[in-house]
Length: 74
Image 1: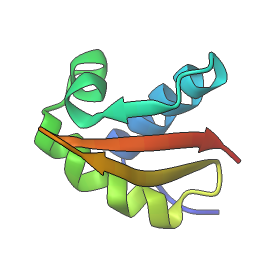
Image 2: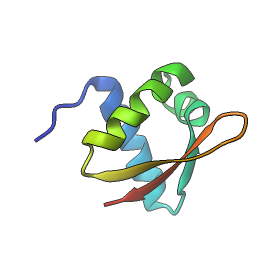
Image 3: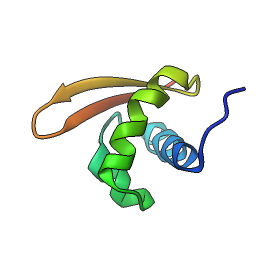
Image 4: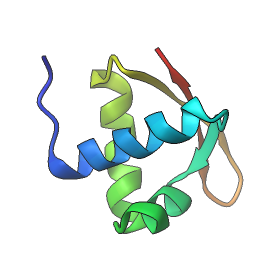
């Protein structure tokens, strides 16, 4: 089993809950506001979580003003 930091656990929990409700696209700044982290803290961790998480699939989706992440539950 993969060990996650407190911040990673908070991000994964947020993504699982919201993806289960049908949301699929997220921005780091919106996640950060919801869980009390900075958008930089979230943005740095999302690519790492994409590699090591088996619970959710996190894919870098698009980049306009900020990167959008597509999330699906595995």
